[in-house]
Amino acid sequence: MGIQRTLAIIKPDAVAGGKTGKILAHLEAAGFRLRAMSMTHLSEREAGEFYAVHRDRPFYSSLVAFMSSGPCIPVVLEGEGAVERLREVIGATDPLEAAPGTVRRLFAESKERNAIHASDSEENARKEVEFFFRGRDLL
Image 1 (cartoon, rainbow, N blue to C red):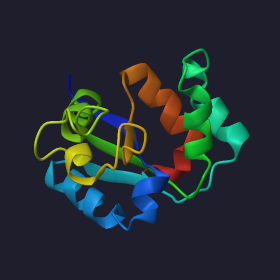
Image 2: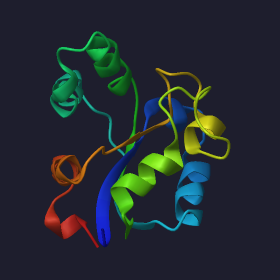
Image 3: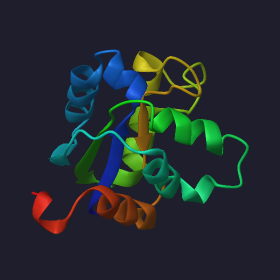
């Protein structure tokens, strides 16, 4: 696998709930290195573009509304097998199904307000990182 970069987004519920620092500390403690980070407030158009892969899914409209409801924090993380490892560290989408000690089990409110996004493949990680960051923004 080797060293990879992946994207996480601390979602509006976690930002509003003051959980950002705890989530970042959890990710660093899990061995990820932060390579870029910013705070942004996505417009509905931007959130729709970012989640376009889910356009035909029943939750698309509510996801776009939620992700544009307040500030979020995109973060580029780096580490050994980062894409798959981050998915393990954040846990299942539904915090009630997430393993103990995972980000979602610790910090998510519900399946819909689940604190964090993570890229699901190397290809999507590259696209998602490029959505938020330019080359010069990555350390």
